[in-house]
Length: 415
Image 1: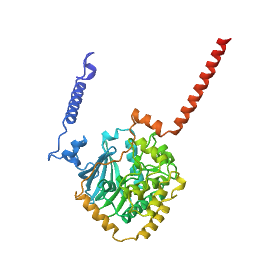
Image 2: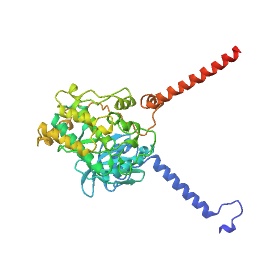
Image 3: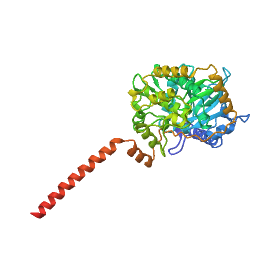
Image 4: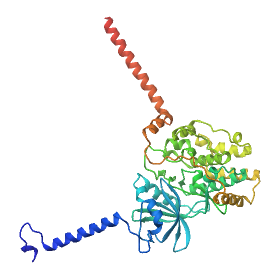
């Protein structure tokens, strides 16, 4: 019976079979999403059952991301998840940064993720964490980085480990060399802080996380969101608190000065009850002198940090190379030791073995999430100096209008 002989109002038999087939497919698809099933060996893909469920994702393909196998989760934050993984082709361990779909839904998250991959891929330096590859697998974005077996500088500080001054200088020198290479490649980091500085078990210092990076040569920021502050308040330069477009290489050097201050004293240069109060102090206040908090630090290093943290960019070191030269001079005065790397390695081993208990981190990071009403009001009063001038003018104008109006009114009543 062909479709031409079917009476009006009735469905052709072939179309009926197609609808039944489509309905079955939809039911099967719904069932799969309702209860994700493991593979025949009970494998939940590269994450394992616990890791997959904790991240809200279940993949049934063991080699979903170009042959990488997840070993363990290293860190979880607002910008995704970082895991230690093994690359099957080379059998090497990598740090795999993942942006699952629930993170990607946040405004600008994918843009920052791609920006980090592009910025890091431009760099090749022993003090910069290398990027191997990146891409997408389904709705999952990923970047494969060099795996650094060690701890972050932030973790050392949280453990209240007081590093001797020569080691502080060595760390600062390594980071300055990484920044010099990045700046020569027209990349600004814009988020230099202890949490983004890694120290390996071999005592190597590595700068990582270029998620807020910016191309300097074209002055074209990867970040396109206007009117928001990006970075970590405790380590942001005064100009960075006003505009993401106002920063240049000297802003990274200011942040490095804040890191050295943090290492030398065990505290950040400024603190406050909220992030905007900290930002305002970067713009207006002078930090407590390093030597008053730690007399063991030399005047040479204190002067170096003071210059790096000058409020006006023109008063700071103008290039990373200039800061490298000054750090090298201070290192020579202190007496350079070839054992610096091995000493750092011993400290890393001590922390990594859990012989020193971690304390809660104190860093606060402002990302792309819109601030609440309270934070907006604080920002208006503390971070926007023009606000007070505008209010002052408005009050004067209102008073003048009222005075004029009242004068006219009383004059008319008198007449």
